[in-house]
Length: 502
Image (tube, rainbow, N blue to C red; front, top):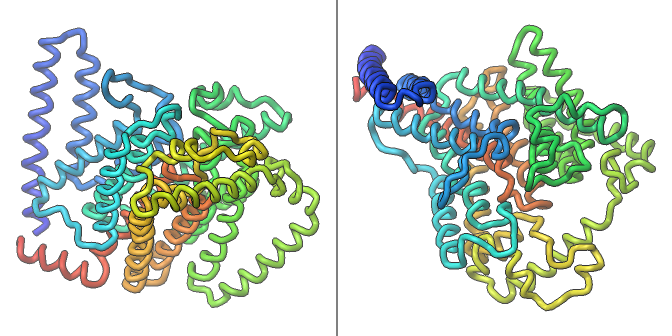
């Protein structure tokens, strides 16, 4: 069977390579001035063809995820009149989709949508698209981050698309799980380096901003916020906090599975994460860090002392908070202060305004991406000025955003996606072994860490506009759902299909 597939893919690979070379030579003859670009694109096409033939599809989605943290839309934007601005993350997603399409044509068969989470994700995507089409894909007087089209692509269409691709190109080997996660930790060192340089500069210890690259991070490009915080390479501090929380537990997951010096490098990385998380000034990140610790202590590893470790951690945390109460209760977020009241009052106001919007249009909402417009039409509330947010405050809870914009229908679909995803991960966990394999039960515990981290963030900010966090969450979800192919009944179906083809 493997020999048959190998001969088939080798023939395809040779034909595709010859076609690329022929097109490149013809283009160089017709347009000699564009020869360097032609051969650059030829090389990229050859790499894509090789990845498609060999089945290396997942790595393209992971590169798409990480590109948001280093080469986002400010790095090399390509303006296209009448179309979206092209950026490296968007081009990488298109490249990944093309690689998958070519791989799918070589493999044959049908794209599978045989899991409830995939159907619910598709229904939510279609419903949000219809809602935005009826209400309008743009919203007057807002930035692109709150525009319906941006939130739809960044929060729904592309992330769910990544999940579908990775489900249909599952991690059939240990390495297909291992190397993307290690790649994420390699990026983590860069994220920590940028964070500590920013923190040193902001705290007045030393001006290390000259060490940060790309320069758009330092220069504060249009659309970037949280200039007074260590936000890493992102437009705001929220995705940096989400990354750091997940990175900490990813380090401990990998520590038991890698060997050599890199194992101890992961320990150093994990030790650097808590301070960098405080430097972000995101209180939701600190809360997620603690809740994810509960998940990790109870469900990760084979130790019987999960509750005991959790109790010890609770005691240490309590003592630490008491000993540093003045700092914890202060309003200085960069020092770990949790006492700032303005954002709390603003969220209470948002909750009240959301209630008024939902009471007026409870079933279908005001239209996907149109919360700000609906909010501005509400009767004037003096309380908005009291919290310093008269007319400019966007929604800061993804569930309130969904219910106000897409009504109860959209909220049920959105919650249903998470419920179906959790149920699927539970079933997969039962089919995975304990131990130090990469595809073990600890992988599902790590995914639950990601899930808790994402949901906690969503309770305090509208993550629909956070392209990185959505890409990371749903790409990892695709890996987990894809394990349905290699555990339980899924493994039997794959084996039966292989026997029939042979």
